[in-house]
Image 1 (spheres, one colour):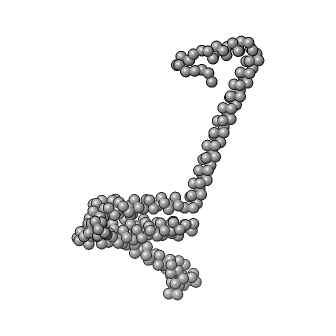
Image 2 (tube, helix red, strand yellow):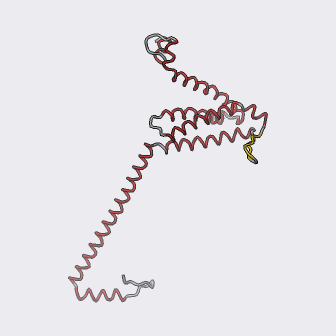
Image 3 (tube, rainbow, N blue to C red):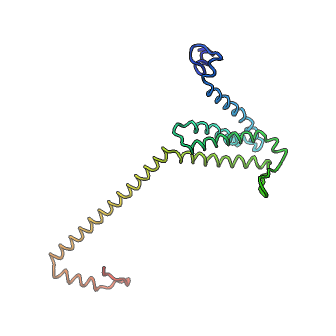
Length: 226
């Protein structure tokens, strides 16, 4: 398969040739791929900033994950065909967070050189310096984890499964309680039958023995009578 047939199969109308008329047919796919490629190239800048701050390639990859994972995961989460309104909002928020982090690290040199302060309100300000770069990485990591958990917990299918498991759990507990009650009642019934049998077999001696049981004091000071 030559390159033209490959592009025609992926982006075109599969008529055996690929030309400019085929591009609009898959404009959504093309736009999505271009945007993802642009963000992918931007992540190289994020890696540079992370490596300059930490001096560790592994930690630098952590900076890349904080910016790239929300962007790509958000797209996948939004395209989920069973996503509800809350899940779609979370997905959009994840994409925006990824873009914001990538853009912020793209201006890292400017951030470090200016050391400015952003004033939100009276007495509320945010210093923009090298420490902010670390705070952003840690804060966005926490937000990503929380957003992912919320996305899972708010899923309708997951919620239904969780409800079903909880109902089954309560039913199992109720079944165990009934089994315990059944056994206890059976034991008590057997004890009562034994006691009645003793009364019938030894009527005079049983009553005399019962009086002795009732009059015997408990060594601990309690009362044996029930």
